[in-house]
Length: 158
Image (tube, rainbow, N blue to C red; front, top):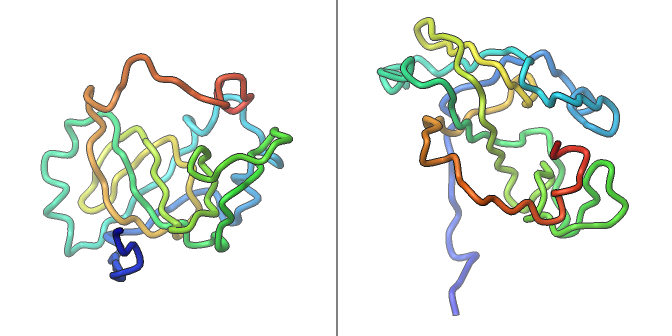
């Protein structure tokens, strides 16, 4: 049997998010439902200058996958109640920020780059969110025949 608690994993942020959202309630769909999601919300990803060389060639991509830390989240539960749902769901079948490891992922549209600053739209992160990694979104990431499980009828999935 594997020892899952064998080793501590450490991450060092490579940058920080600049967002119009300053508190969790600004993003919470229960309080601030956005039928179009966050696609029109603009912000910036400020990459630490020591990592700026890693941004070479990024301007050729339309979208980026941003992996980040949910720095304002509380310790998660394994069962959570998603927005607009009455039933509790397993945390790993949701996008809840309250997880055993507070790691998030989102896809943003790249609008432009100026040095170590990436201008993006689709921001659904709080101001000051630590960025752990950035990857290009490619056609390989666009999966066919996606099943949406319990979310197929969710107001958040339309």
